Amino acid sequence: MKAILNKLYNHERLSKSEAKKILIDIAAEKYNDAHLASFMTVFMMRPITVEELSGFRDALIELSIKVDLSAYNTIDIVGTGGDGKDTFNISTLTSFIVAGTGQKVAKHGNYSVSSQSGSSDMLASFGYEFTNDENVLKKHLEKANICFLHAPKFHPAMKAVGPTRKALALKTFFNMLGPLVNPGSPKNHLLGTFNLEIARLYHYILQEEDINYGIIHALDGYDEISLTSGFKFFTKNGEQIINPEDLGQKRIQQSAIFGGNCVADAAKIFKTIIEGKGTEAQNNVVLTNAAFALKIVNEATSFDTAFEKAKDSLFGLKAKECLHTLIES
Image (cartoon, rainbow, N blue to C red; front, side):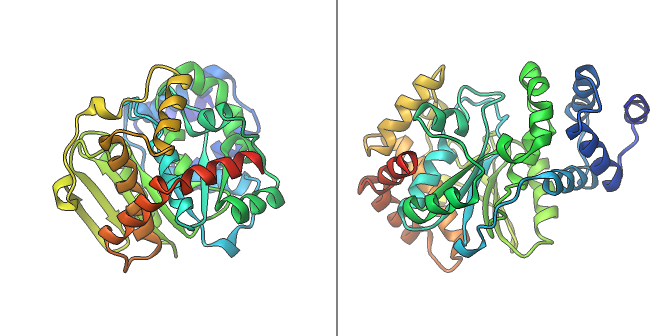
């Protein structure tokens, strides 16, 4: 690792193959915590390249425990995290709303590193038991329209760096990798990033693949559609800037989507919203994200039609039923 760090400190870049090998070695626990922290810090101080991110991704996918969910035409709805905004669990709520419309969701997630509550923290607080058993995950998809893929159950490299990431409590390149390495290989993705540079990296990588995707970067730094500002939206057809007003939505204040100061606070907000009792701002944020997810699966669907489907799922308590079914299955 000393040679690798010296190379990086000299402002050199890693090739795709070098990046892949390093991450495979990290997964094999060949490096100590100090080396890992130093290595991760490099990519906080300068931009990661497409080659580096692709190499890291290839390593995680190669090492992952894979599940075959190809029969279900799933979508993953996930952000990088690391935006430091402390919102409620927008992508997780969005996933259940989409599941409530009948669309199958293979949600990839993890514990929070830089916010109060990640998707794994939330589901664990509700009593959900993480699994990498393919048969169980398929049962969840069939009964609840959603399954949850807890990253540490599938990615040994994530486990190897977990303590260091937790100690740093900062966004690292692992935040960038999470949305790109769903072990269920869904054909549809709604991804959020906390900065525009990463959104473009995702776009460069994903446009080469035979999948449907949308990448969101809110112009004020959220890794999801926040309705606090406009957002950049990338798909295989190009990129555009979309403002809340373009969707018939009101702009909201950042305080309207605050997620609380602990997991218990976040869970209370989550339950209130999924029971159809959220504020107008909370509801519109998750419904807008859900509508874009539905449009990714079926490009011909209009935003208004997708938004109404999402409303029926939320206020008809179909999303809530998906949550209960998933936890009880």
